[in-house]
Length: 397
Ligand SMILES: Cc1ncc(COP(=O)(O)O)c(C=O)c1O
Image (cartoon, rainbow, N blue to C red; front, side, top):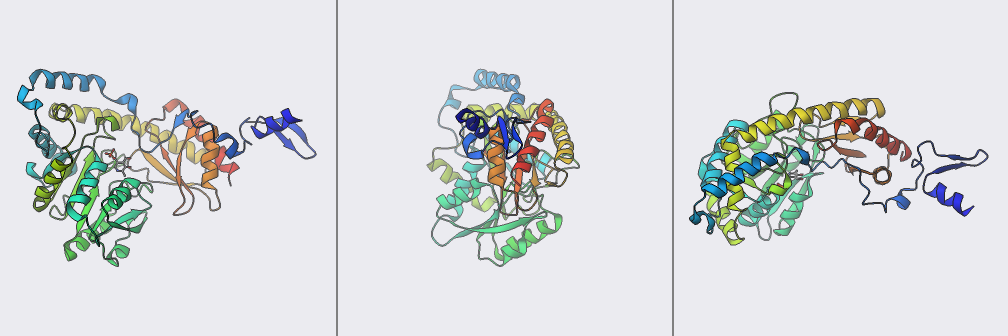
């Protein structure tokens, strides 16, 4: 009896009153979420929305670029660098961002950072830090924004997001000094800020001389049409623009950038100096080399094709396995958002998923929803993964 109870608890057997005990059709399908959620290390398929395809990192190209840097950099280059970043990278980024994202900028406005999170921390501290200041943030949204703002003693004002992006009319009713948005692909809803909201947002910033902090997250990945341009290109004097290599190369590179309105550059560079400067100049020079040689463009073209294939397979499998679920945010980025039927228990879906070796994110602020990253989901496993996930959703509804 003990053995049977244990096997039932672990999902190997199904016991039904009056119908006897049978081997579970899918042996994990009846597992109690708490019992198996212990199995944290056993992740077989990571649907994290935060990872690019790490096996696609251009190792050889990076190796060649690092070799070039080590051969060509003079000894003087090994001293303390300019806290704003090495001139080569600032120059190549300025040209790259103008060409690919429509930014209006000069080289002086570019500051190299250790990624978006570090850029945000720098911006809040240098520009807004102090008692009584507040920043509006998208809600739900990426924890990196709220955490860095809170660390800089700023009050955060959550503003809802719908399928057109942040609700600017709600924002206009607040006394926020700044707003942080991810217009190209909002996390976790996947919304792309509509043209109408873009115009409203710029108008809001102009009226009160306020700051828009633009996290140009996922902007490199737009599948159905040309990427929408940056907000910075519309309003360079009131937008502080942030970008990063975390999704285009790999999070481990830890190189990002910000583009500041000219009047704020001095304060930002001074804050960067005080906290020890940006990433290693050697890595900065390697990235500059990649951009100058067109290697980054080539890499992104290949990655876009690979991600588009994975995304299409995921959408097909979701339509088949979870026909009632509403999928959004598929136009851009590396994840889709799947709205589940009302009443679905998201924590329970996640726990069931974990028992099957699937790491998935979810949120409940706008009704039950899952966030499915497909960047590291190999084509051959998309179908079985979605089948398993659909079983978890059924179990938890
Ligand atoms: C919304 C959003 N922006 C930016 C980033 C990148 O941050 P970083 O450059 O610090 O790695 C992430 C990473 O997960 C993110 O979710």
